[in-house]
Structures are given as C-alpha cells and as structure tokens.
Image 1 (cartoon, helix red, strand yellow):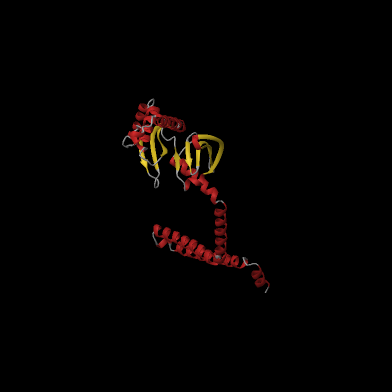
Image 2 (cartoon, rainbow, N blue to C red):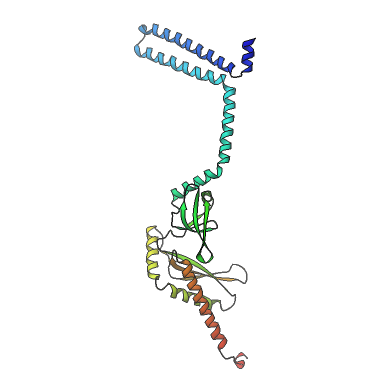
Length: 288
C-alpha cells in the first residue's frame, strides 16, 4: 500500500518506474538476441553475422525510444503545450522589436539608404544622421525644403509597410516638380509662357551638365534618356481649378533654392505684366 500511495502522490514516479522496467526488459532481450547471433557466427558468413548484430542493436534502440515516448506521452504533451505558450508569449512581447530588426535587414539587403542620404519615410522627410537595428534618426526638413532643427527617430518596422524614397539616389541632379495654381480664365496660357520662360532662365547655367549626368545615368540603367529641359504639364484637379506642373532639373540638395528662385521670378514677371496692363490708357471708344 505504501508503494501505491507513493506512486499516486508523486505523479512522475509511476512513468519513471515503467521506463526503468521497459529499458531493462529491452536490454535483456537485446543481450539474449546478441548471444544467439554470436553462437551462430561459426555457421554463417562474417557479413551476415555483422548485419544481424547491427539490426539487433538498432531494433533495441528504436523500441526503447518508442516505449519511453508512449510512457511519457502525457508529460511530453503538457511540456509541449507549456513551451508553445511560452514561445507565443515571447513573440507577442517582442513583436515590435522583431519587426524593427526585420526592417533593418530589409534596409541593408535592399540598400535603401545610408547615413547622409536625404529620404522620405511616410510623413517624415530629412537627412539620415544615424541608423541601427531598431530605429533610424532623421534630421527633419519641413515646408520650403528647410531644416526644422528637430531630429526624428523612426522605428525600422515602418519600412516593412511604407515606401522609402531616397531623394539623393542620383549623384548630382534630379528632376523636381513645382506645382503652380493659376486662375481658371483665358489668361492661363500667358502664365504658362511666363513660368516656362523663368524656368529656362534659372536652369540655363547648369542645364547642359544636368542633361549629361541624367542621360548617362539612364544609359547605365538601360532606360530611355529623359527630356531634361524645363517643361509644363497642365492639371485640372477639380472643376474650375487649374494647376501648372513645372518640371525642372535641379541639384539633389538644392530643390528648395531652385523652387524659390522660379516662384519669385514668376511672381515678379506676372506682377510686372499686370502693372503694365493696368497702366495702359483706357479707350472707351475702343470698348464700344
């Protein structure tokens, strides 16, 4: 009775006892089988004797493993559930950290950017000053392409779901688009002509160099060379509204400077034309 009570009180003792008995039984059977094989060794070839010896040992090992697995099945199932619960809890607790590490691996494998590049990640735009396994630090650039003086730390996990724009991917020059809204009237073509004239004046000093660099880059990548000269596309975002989309070549880090030059000269040119039109003498007879 004491043995039975002891086994019941300690649940692990029962499978341990069965395990000991099972292993001992298999080892005894293996010993008896090997004795039989050795006794018949003189009557069989050496290779056959060796093969039977190996088979007996392998069969005994398999029986031991299967028996122990059957005896400890309940305990192993409980352990497996516990390990699964621990693994799930660990993954949930470190989910964001793992995603950040995966984002860093994606950045490194794709070569998205490096320190010193000007990038745009989601709503954050600026120059990369540091990056690691968990986060990337960006010196923010705000409206007007000007530094705000703030450093923004972006978790690398955002790179798994958000496009990363590298504005300094090109060596020296890029094509920059400037949106200029104009009144919806018959004078929009004059505004377009004035804007294009101003853009050609601003870009005249470096246009040939930009064309050579961008065409060389397109050739290296197997693409058709782009038209680098300033050009304007008309956009109608909604009824009674008109936008002039001016595309100009500019240095990668001087988009804000070039944009301000174009806009200020355009406003000055439009203002002068408006003053000249207002200063013309009004002929009532001509109106009639």
